Image 1: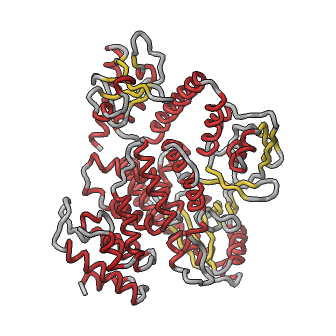
Image 2: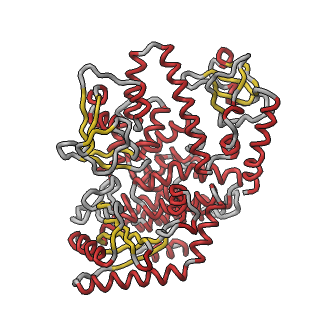
Image 3: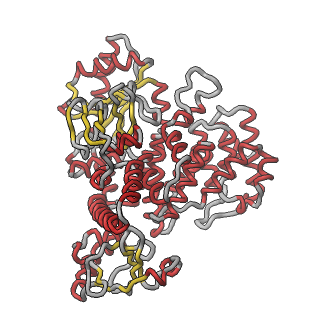
Length: 606
């Protein structure tokens, strides 16, 4: 047996003899084919699949998954067929390798229908076998760990794709250690200045932090010991991305934030968790509105824990999470913990079939969406944060954070959404535009003569509700009115996007340049008129003084491309749908270049 494989098995002794044999066969197979090959960065071809196998083994996945890690990627690259894989390694390995190969070339960096189709393939693969996505997540984690080996122009694109898709996906699957590391590594390449600032702060206060946490830990161990409860206490600084989000949310520098520490208390039963919570609140005063009970109401990824923030030693806020040991395994490994408790064990906590995201994907697979609707549904409804509200009968409804009563009504039934005229939350009348909050009891009022309106469309947040309202409006509005409204909606969305990028500082170079440009300068002249809704194409990133051509889209206004853009020439019916456009004035063109230059210069030096 190869020395590297011997070391691998010694590090992960949990594999059964059958698993060890399957993994060994896969390793020897790829070793014979690619043993002497190197990648473009100079490292051995085998290094990457071996690191991916380590990640999967740390998640305690089965032998078929680890064997597939050695074989994942392109079948053509290995020079084998799917039938050959099945004859040697069995149906499961064939299915996993083919599934990962099918989406290995997926590119999700351009916000187009191609991105939507790529994401569609990837997410629907989860329905067939969740292990396909776990292998791809492990592959992405290793890719982010090795991102310094990629060209600089690719680093930012890969990092943005990771923070948009892969980190939220790891979150929905409940694999917190992968989510946290993906987020921190993405921040490193998307906003290096903020990353270095937070890193310096955490390093500088390490000694002070350790002393503080040691004192708080001693207090908790004292009261639990006196109560006859044995607990394990773990403390840590919050990860960089979490600190960065707090900085943005509160508009504060990192050295102005104090609640950067978290402590976990691991108990042996649910009753002990609630008892320890009470003991903690006898030591330190809890902060109002900072308690969450995820044991009684688990997150859709299976996560369970009690969260409380208290004013602890030295008057400093401290977040404390209280959970059982088994809940902690689920919190760290998410759906992967299914393999820890499989084979009929009574300790089985989470199953792929019970995950909210899997059930939502099954629903999506049964419905027809345009590519753009599907992309919106995935990003907002499946990968975003969730809230939980109740119907008057006590049923729990999971909705994306920011959802309104309109979204709630459409979640109950399309017929309810189409007739909604009012809503109450906890017995109080609220506007239909008001975002719902966790644990509210929501009641909607309907009227048989009511129907969807454009205002409701603008106030809906979920892709499902917006799709249903849009379909009704398109059926009942005149074509001219619909096109006018669509253009207004697209213009509003573009303004929101630019504002969002200004706040995040995470956009690509050209977007960052435009985000700091007055909206008036963005006008494009069409003949003698500038009163058009326009969008700039991401494929060629047009900026003055480049010659430009306008493409009249359906429902999204005029899309501006560089005149020599290859994608522009590939658009069907381009000869009939192109329009001559120009930058509005030489003065504003010069102003645009001057305003864009600092952002472009900053991007180049990062």
